[in-house]
Amino acid sequence: MKLKRIFTYFIDLFFVSLISSIIVMIPIFKYDHVKVEEQTNELYSSILETGSADVDEDILVTGLYNLERSSTSLTAITTFVTFIYFGVAAFINNGRTLGKMIMKIKVVPIKGNKLNPGLFILRTLLITSIIPNLISVISIFYLSPNTWYNLTGIISQIQEFFFLIILGFMIFRDDERGLHDLICQTKVIDTKSK
Image (cartoon, rainbow, N blue to C red):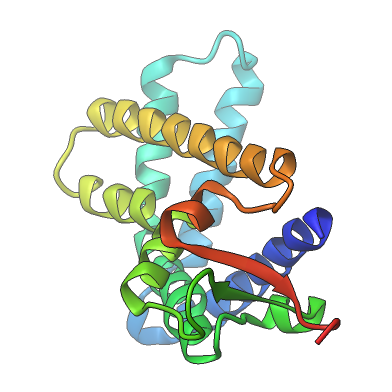
């Protein structure tokens, strides 16, 4: 079931991405994909012209900073959709996301037969990038490009480390419970066998 859970997570990320992409097209959010594409091309061009090893760090940091500022509506929407999808909708649907329904698995509590809403929300925060994304969206408006770049770099490393710990727990524990499952007193079961 280990691979099933990992595959399910990627299915769910696809749905979150799809939903976010559709929502961000609504004019009220003022996401300018042309501007973002131009900034991306400009950044890549400057990297390719000088070579990745010789690129000026200030140009790189400023380019990434401007790109992130232009993409804040997309990041904010994706963060909101992630919370609703993995947290609220999955809780309402008895521990199942669309990916979990497709793969016929669901999250259940260790004790009792009802999921605890607070622990389920905590579980969502632990397994998604909601907190790092919120920090990025907020900090982009208050920090200088260099400070923002350093902060997001540190947060990314912490997030990757935490993800590896969660994955390691799932892979090496006999009961396949990740750290998020242990903290939130949940487990994932196969619903086909019921």
